[in-house]
Amino acid sequence: MFYLFGTVITHYGPASLNHEKARGNVSPLQKTYWDGHIHSLVSGDAIRWGLRYTLQKEGYPINRRWNEDEFTNDLVNENFDPVEFVDDDLFGYMYAEAAKEDIQEEEPSSTGKERRNQTKGSIVQRLGALGVNRGVSLIPYTGALTFNAKSGKIKDRTALHFLEYHNTRYQYTFALDPNHLKVKERILAFIDALMNIRKVGGNNNVFCYKFTPESFVLCWTQRETPGIFYCFEEGDLIPKMKSEVLEDIEVGDIKASELWIGGRVAKGLKIKNAHIFRGKEQAIEDLKKVIVKDLELSYPY
Image 1 (cartoon, rainbow, N blue to C red):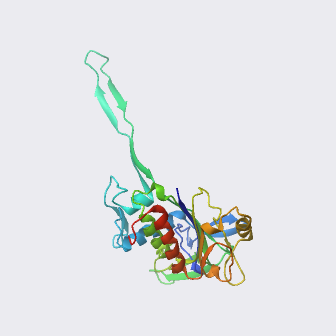
Image 2: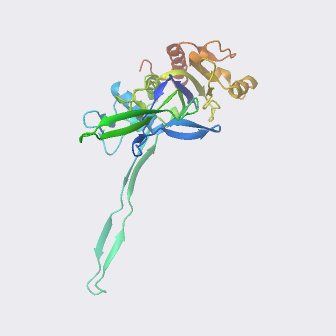
Image 3: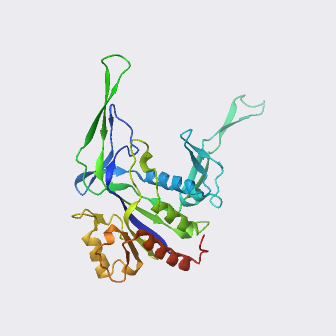
């Protein structure tokens, strides 16, 4: 059985409003400690939402469709169907119905009290084939804020607002088990969506961050563990692969022949037997050919 793992790094830009709620008059970024420093985050749910929306815009059958006019997710089929819908297959689903109470009256000869039987709630669920972890900023967050003001309805009253932002790149990871897909060709649709992902973290008129990959390391392997998660770090001018990951490749703990590396990080990178392309599209097309062969897929799909 084969598995697809990957670490993706985004383009550099000012990021804000990554699906975090406003606190008073401040719109904060999500943050965490990472290697002893505070880094900003983009939630895995926001990335999954962006992938689903990209698949929707590219014309694939989606069960939870985003209604841009109403700003709602509209469910096409409440019973779900991983064969018909790409997102039910890739991301999985869970629908829980609360338990209902059935009342049954006892025979008149008894105490006259009602007997109550509690029925169990029903759950419709399926684990998706795709797992996505959160995006972590490549560099620590320094506390940057923008100051904004809006005139109030009453004269001489002004509403003040602060917006946290971070000039950075984000790296995030994913794992896809194509053996769990009802339609295995959807692994190719996922790869296309990954390369063209849009509207992550809201990506509205205030936050329009380019979340498409600047570089990536993908691992097509028969191992169930990848060893390449969060494999980037800040370089002098462009990101680079971490030295400990390169060492694992050198000693054979990570098989170089299972790696497809594309984007700016590939410039000047030399790893024997790895598939290294400065062009992202070249790397993706080369990987797709191998996937199609290994999974015996129909292609074009």
